[in-house]
Length: 263
Image (cartoon, rainbow, N blue to C red; front, top):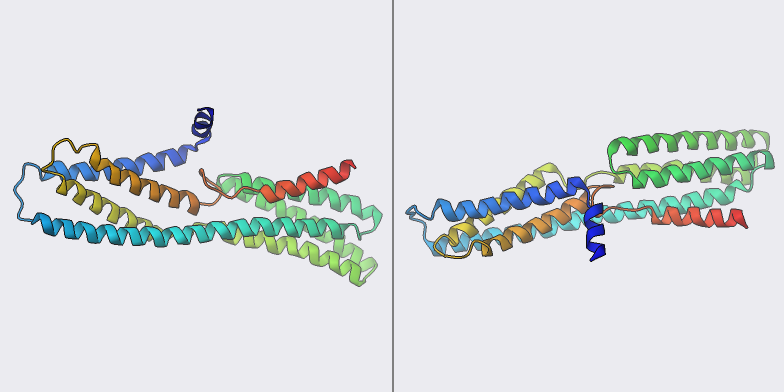
């Protein structure tokens, strides 16, 4: 069971708060529905309550499925941008060899620092760190562009133009990543999901108000809904939590470059 302990040790604090916060809220709603009406006479027909509960659960299921598809789409977009950055940086590394020897080493060092900055960007888990590494990346890009433009002024030819294009693609790929590095699900959608979840669990408790020994049974739906909302939340928020895009391709590129240098 060491992997379980390791998982819990690496479990982000924010994710823990989100999971337990939603679970406690929905569980409280279910128990409130049971105990509020337990000793109160109500004119609501049980069959009618079950029909309403079924309709709300159906709507909640549709909403969860729709929102989950949106969050997965955003996650896939972030993965594609990370893969695209790896390709663009690898191309820039190759084109750098076309520079003059006195500029080539400097450009390769800058590209190595740029690659490290992009890896740290994908590893960071808050906006301040993201902003820090994005600024560092732009600074490295500007220095690379200065080297390429200086070389282009000295010897203007199609070869140097290809180097300029490769360095320009660095900026384009980074901006695409920045655009995709945002929440895909608006807050109003989250409010709607939570509202439907609370109402459905409240009705679950209401339908179980006459039953004895169902205290643990009515926790099943709150737990399942919490799990679904938690997964959506983890997928939707970039760079945070348990489920996030990792710079595997960029790290692989760095390892390849280091191996070539050692040879």
